[in-house]
Length: 151
Image (tube, rainbow, N blue to C red):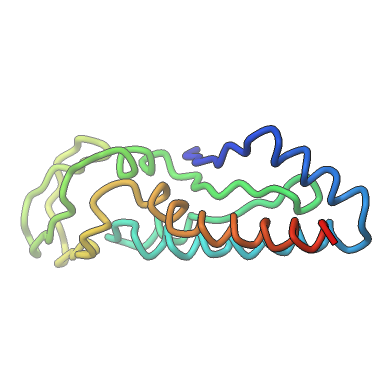
C-alpha cells in the first residue's frame, strides 16, 4: 500500500488536543477540515496520476480514522509505488505495438491504442504532489480553528 503522511509537529498536536477537549464543536470543525483536505488530496492525486485503464486513479481513496480526526489517503494497487517513485515517462502505445510494462517487466502487444495521461505532473509523485497542493489549505483551516479557540 502506498502512503504519504503529513507529520504534525508535537506542539500542533497538543493544540489540537486542547481544542478538542475545551470547546464544544471544535472536534467537529477539526474533523471537517481533515475530511475536506483528504478529499482534496484524493482529487488532486487522481488528477495527477498516470492513466492507462483508470484502475490506479479509481483506487486512490481516503480512509478516516481516529473518529475523523485523521485520514489515510492510499491506493491498494501493488504497482502504485512504481508510478509514484518512478521518473519514467508515460507513453502513448499504438494498437498492435509491443511494449514492456514498467510495473511487471512483461512484454505485451496492445490490442488497442493506449494513451497515458499526458499531464506533465503525471510522470511521478502524483500522491506527494496531491498532498503538497492541499497542505496550505489544511494548515489554513487548522489555523482558523486555532484562532477561534484563542478568543
